Image 1 (cartoon, one colour):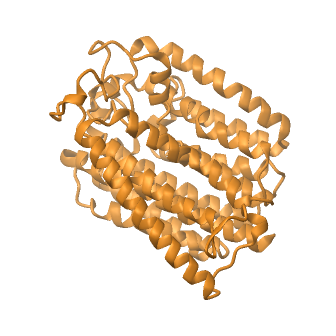
Image 2 (cartoon, helix red, strand yellow):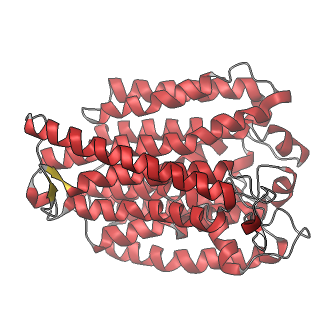
Image 3 (tube, rainbow, N blue to C red):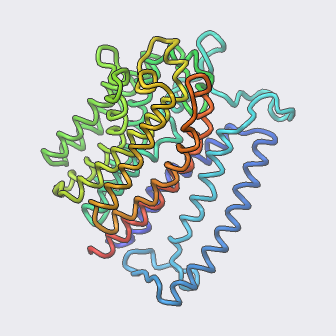
Length: 417
């Protein structure tokens, strides 16, 4: 348990560093200046507020920290680890936002010359990037945290600590898992992606045909060793869930299975992509899947299904043009938005009514999603693409929700231990 906060913070800092590095590499000219100002301003404000209010709350006895769970370094009364949340928020959120809204080429700055800030948009439009750059974009780096965090937090909550097994599992669900999930998707969704203008950036790459085989091979080579290790050090139950997770990654997109083209099963399978890492993390240490745990997992699954369904709305026209089916192409844009709302609401109900405290507090993290999706209840198939603005907000909401859940897990570990 020594340095629990430090270990967790270092592990969760990986996607923050990745987002910052990606922004520093891609942004040029005015986009880079705006990003630096945003990060610097937010960092200064959040660090000052954290220092002031952490010290006030600790001095008032509202919160307390055990030095055995930290590095022992403090700024006044506040443990230095507490400032990592301010740093993460100040760096990660502006970096993601800058990447989503960057003007790219043609912003009028001389230092853009000779740089290509955008991934290739379509086969034949430009020479494909190098293999490593292609694989990096195919893995959706902005979304790495969405699968790594569920595993890491579940493992931490189940075991009360973090060891080599937890670190390796987190690394697997951080990068190789996402390369397999999104890389396979990009290969088999190529025709649809060509028609989709939002592809070719952080929301998804258009994978050049010449890279299809290499992407599939790389996905296999990077996942199999991790899978073998997690089976060797895990339990029979965790191995079965790991196998189900790997199957769902393949079945969602691969030809002959294509779960993503079976309405409603597409939403459930996509949600399982994010829930299964948590189940693996929990069962890897032999922790039982109790009723309370299942309630939390069910709420998480409902959240994931809602997010996938709402995300499918923006692609209705492109999927239909490519002859692809989804929950949105079958229900239509408006009905799918209402379906997403119902799933989010159900997740809140499950957490509040069934899940024990403090897990029930995670219901508050779902409310911003409800508010975002509710703004599009009048959308139709003809203007479904405007939901992309709401979808982009999810990248920020996911970070806020992850912060909320992380606090709940830390509180639970401290109390239970």
